Length: 227
Ligand SMILES: C[S@@+](CC[C@H](N)C(=O)[O-])C[C@H]1O[C@@H](n2cnc3c(N)ncnc32)[C@H](O)[C@@H]1O
Image (cartoon, rainbow, N blue to C red):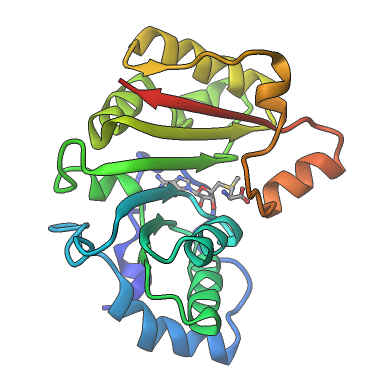
């Protein structure tokens, strides 16, 4: 089955395009050979990751800058990345191949497929970095940070674990803070505004963050602690 066949094509989609420009021969080769070996299964997404010190999930890793960086910085930790955009998955595969990284697993598809079998409190942390903003009000309902989604991800993160959420869209920041606050299972106590205007420690930069900065929008970086 082709990797694209996993991608749902329904109104329930939270993301935009699933494929962009044609892959290079090197990338296509990795999709055929490497991806099957490092893909997680929806039936047991954390299978084989017991030997790592801790486990993290990045939702919508885009061009994979962040997951590749964290994984190479922390070889004792495991990183699972979910991304429906094939070109992003190909970039991740190329980075894994070139860096010889053995601590990244990928899911080419909608992250929500992984949740049922992931296990309560199975993750040490989660990253949602510059999610699709869906700025038109009639599209707001596609924003990933819905009440239901926040409840689901909260159940997956260990008490004391973290959720990093970054966005440059102020309306989406407000939207998320309102829902995180209403959920009441996450702690968030910034000392000052500077706390959420400062990138995360070791921040490598991502394509969407750089685009935001170039276009004059201010990236906000939040870390919520699961209680
Ligand atoms: C605006 S991009 C940001 C990419 C990257 N995090 C960055 O900072 O450059 C949002 C990404 O989230 C992905 N995405 C959207 N919905 C998703 C879902 N349900 N599961 C996994 N990834 C999703 C999109 O395909 C897209 O690549």
